[in-house]
Amino acid sequence: MKPVKDADGITTGFLEILDRIDFASADSQTNKMIGSSEPFKRLLTKINRAAKSEIAVLLQGETGTGKELVAKALHESSRRAEKPFVVIECTGLNENLFESELFGHEKGAFTGATHAKSGLIEIASGGTVFFDEIADVPLSMQVKLLRLLETHCYRTVGGLKQRKANFRLICASHKNLLDLVESGQFRKDLYYRIAGFPISLPSLAERSDDIKGLILHFLSHSELRHKKFSSAALKRLSEYDYPGNIRELKSIVEQATLLANEDLIEVHDLPEQIFARPAKPQISDSEILSLEEAEERYLTQVCESQNMSIDELAEKLEVSTRTLYRKLQKFGLKYE
Ligand SMILES: Nc1ncnc2c1ncn2[C@@H]1O[C@H](COP(=O)(O)OP(=O)(O)OP(=O)(O)O)[C@@H](O)[C@H]1O
Image (cartoon, rainbow, N blue to C red; front, side, top):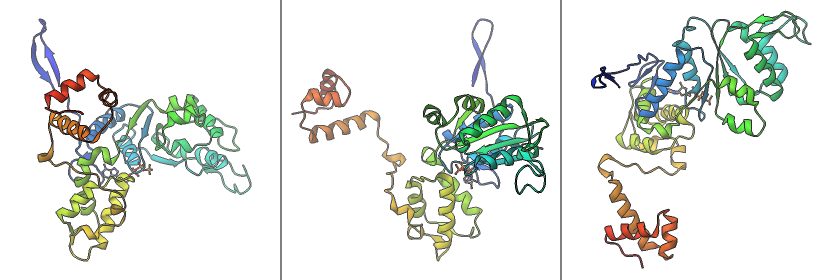
């Protein structure tokens, strides 16, 4: 909301900026990104803004957070939507393979090149190229990639003619690229080329309000969609921390529907991985304390269990001894 002011600076109204978003939904819909939590909405706004531009987008987030899905959404909401969306999986591509996959090769360029082959850059012409796991591009190849991005020109392997490239660039990595720049494993100049608009994808733990909606979405798209989760099973699923993020959640839902003998999926039908990690305690609405009350409870516990000097305790709590005395007095506590 932006205030609208008149010539005297008096607010006369508010302007609300609404973004129309077609690629996501709060309720289950096929081929849409599902969610309604605040971190997810912030992500959608960024995707929507970036989609309208030609800027190079870098998607960073843990594995399974939806980077490829976001890349597709960016492409489909862009003016290149009618043109190809080409994914280049950078993991496991050695230098030679990377170059011939990307740029294509001429007949006889190397042993086994019995036909000329188009590269992915040519196939993507006019569309979007998505480099998944960009951190895995070997250093020697990073130079060639940089040249392509700077000049928009390339040569096929074994070819002489310069060809023009026309694509929009999206890259993704689950590793922190700036750390790799620091340790010399990723070129700094390439980093700034690809990170025109960096977007961090929240982990599922950061958007736990979306877990239930995602469970219902994956259930309604599974083969056994007539089954239902019991409320205890749903609660247990909400308490799990999903190191594999949305991909793991999807697989857990599919396994649970298969493991359950009955149509109601119970806690004991959930796959074992759920029980291998301690559940994070959930705080229900009725259990939320005021910060002051939380402080009082915490200080009471600390006072009962510590035997360091009051100065040491204040230092640990990162307050002055005076502040600590004041708080103890306020809550009627004694520290002996
Ligand atoms: N918001 C969402 N709503 C529904 N499904 C989602 C959402 N985000 C991700 N998914 C699903 O989760 C799975 C993992 O997503 P995706 O492959 O895009 O993750 P990724 O971050 O690219 O993973 P990786 O780093 O391992 O390549 C896919 O099946 C995808 O369809």
